[in-house]
Each structure stands twice: as structure tokens, then as C-alpha cells.
Image 1 (cartoon, rainbow over the protein chains, first blue to last red):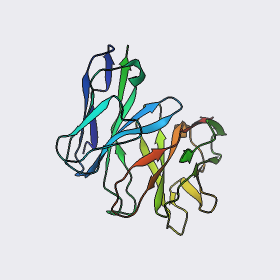
Image 2: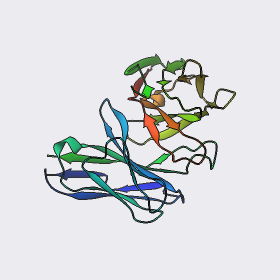
Image 3: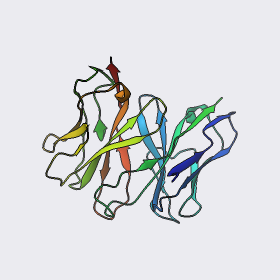
Image 4: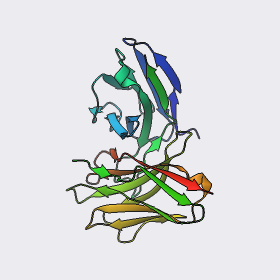
Length: 116
Length: 117
């Protein structure tokens, strides 16, 4: 059981390049999320998808786009990478609150992105 | 205002001793959940423990317990009998909203725990 799988694990981009971070989960969860982690900042929500076919902005959406391709997959795209987007990116999935009393989010292993 | 505040950037504890990691939160929603995650140096996020706002008793999971003081809006993590493998970054997080609402976690900035032998 893989859980949440992110690709790639590491990436170096030049300023202005584009790329897509891929995320897939095999837990049949409805909700999926993209977070970024910066030193001293904790994890901040970029975008989320409550269910297949819907996406919404989180706390720091500027410079990113997302696609909920199907129930399993949620991708994050950087159209024109900037050095400020150097970060560790985490994908997560969960059931919406109410399905169970303990609805923790399950995280992928992270993608370390450097923009030079 | 920050929704989750972790005031201890770093903490040190001796092996086999107990340690408390502080977390305070800010919400006006009567329905919320509080989570603690562990992030070792390898980078993965590991769920530790959960406390719901309507739970009457403090949550416990093995060596982890959550000291939930609702009136003070605090949800401190207590680790008993610390082990070297407990050295990691610890994040407190909160989910707000009524049943059926979407699930979004707001994280604190974390506390780096170092367990000394």
C-alpha cells in the first residue's frame, strides 16, 4: 500500500522554467492538498481539492496552478518558476471531516525544489 | 493573528525523561480538531495524535499524550520516556469547520526537539 506518492523527489529549475509536480494517492480519499514548507514557516496550504472536479485556493496560491485529474491524482504546476518558489512541496490526502472522528491527513514524502 | 502558535523553536531533553511541547490555537469555530505531526530529518510527515474539540478526555497514543485545555486554547504534546528516535521537528496543526466541511490543516511553525543521550 503506497499511500501518497509524489514525483519527482528532487528538482532544480532555472528561473522562468515551468514544471509540474505529480501526486497520486491509493487510499480512495476525496480530498487532496498541496503544501509548501519553508524554514521557520511551518507548512502553508497552496491549493486544495475537496473532491474530484473541484479546486480552491489556499493561503499562498500565487504563481501556482493545480489540476485534479481524477480521484487519485492532483498535480501542481509552476508556470514560470521564481527563486521565491524554492521550497519543499508536500502533497496530502484525507477524507473530509465527518467521515470519521479522526480524519488525519496522509502526506507524501515531499519534493525538494530549487529555483536558481 | 496566527491560528497556531508554537513558542518553542527548539527544545532539549535527556533520554528517558518526559518533555512537553507547547501549542496554542486561535479559533472562533466551536468544532475543530487538533493534530500533532512529527517530521524526522528524513523529511516525511508522521501523524502522532488527534484531539477533537468535543472530546471529553485528553487523547493518548502510546508514549504520546495531548494536554488539552480548551478554555486556555492550548493543546500541548507530552512525550514520556523520551528516546533518541524522538529527535525531530514537531508540528501542531488545526482543522476548523463543521461536520461535512472540507478538511484543511493550518500548521504552526514547529518545534525542533533534540533528545540527548
